[in-house]
Image 1 (tube, rainbow, N blue to C red):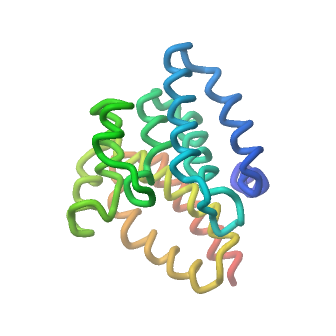
Image 2 (cartoon, helix red, strand yellow):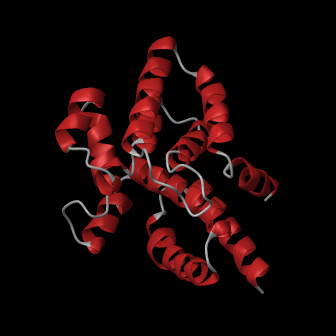
Length: 194
């Protein structure tokens, strides 16, 4: 839980999140690092003008999710996918744009992580539940959102916690580490509310 509490301070500053991510990507090869940097810039450009509940630039969210992915030792394709995971949902970015710039594998990850793209909620969660990598990516996104929840209204917190229990925990059967992190954060948030 100490890591969770430390991250609450980190996510209050887009600058600090970006600085930490730049430090973390040093673990990758030069080619991989250049691709991640390209995705970071693309993410900032596409989410320009958007903000989060905690009052920071929106791009800090995918940057923070990418940091969580690096901590999980994910490969650079997965890190790029995390950086772009909200691009189709929340911006005017086209599928072709992602494919042309970042390739098919990144596009497929982003596509299947995008809620409002083509399918019902049931199909969205079914696709994720059948793919271990997508479970991990979605789980890390949820962990980041649970951090941000501390800055949301009480009603939003309650709704999001219930939604996480119902929709997310049930699909994370292929990665217990991510499942346990989410469960631990939920337990903390519920105790904090009491």
